[in-house]
Image (tube, helix red, strand yellow):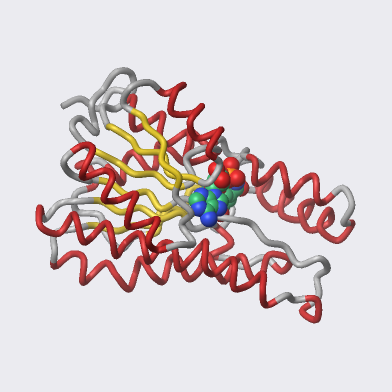
Length: 265
Ligand code: NAI
């Protein structure tokens, strides 16, 4: 057992499923887990990208299609880990979608978008917990990690519905930690600040034609700049996930680990 950052085995012998791992934070975490001795199943809906990422990360990585909005597909990804590797130690429920109000205006709220956000960002997290716990509980060991957001802690006006979905993720972690602890399992959230990924890039593109959003991003950037800097790298979040996945965090559960350079302070 070593805690060094190169060639260490902080996850030696562990098997992980990471949703949303074809890109961004999930991909960086898959790479970090593999560097630390884990076998990783990349679960996503972007098949070409997912296969390419698995090939790039080497023989300890494999890809499976999994739309987290469909509980049966979440269950299948968990079962695949057990079939392929004998057990599951870590589920990182990280897949997520963004959502902005076209204007800073409640009247423009589309409840269909809200349902989709809640399904992918919150309900899917609960489905992941349910099915991971099903296979982890008999061994009385396992770490479940869910990606929330600083907006789940401090809602931002133009991201109101996204903020609700991410606050729900934190609530799910709090609500399930105690029953899972009885089974010897841990569940924690990570709340990243603005992180340089495809999702942030799409937001910036959208802001080019939406002056309200441009102003909002400027306001948020100003607030972040006043903290420790504007944009995080996916690897910053991956290291937090590595800690929560590892046995170093064996007494950490029901926690929301905020990684935001001080944005929410
Ligand atoms: P990303 O867009 O690079 O990655 C998201 C991944 O999730 C993509 O590969 C996408 O295909 C996958 N995905 C989307 N819907 C899916 C579904 N129904 N089933 C399976 N996979 C699906 O974005 P990023 O930033 O890496 O996002 C990861 C998580 O981090 C998300 O939950 C996001 O809400 C959260 N987050 C991101 C922040 C940022 O500034 N980038 C800040 C705070 C939270």
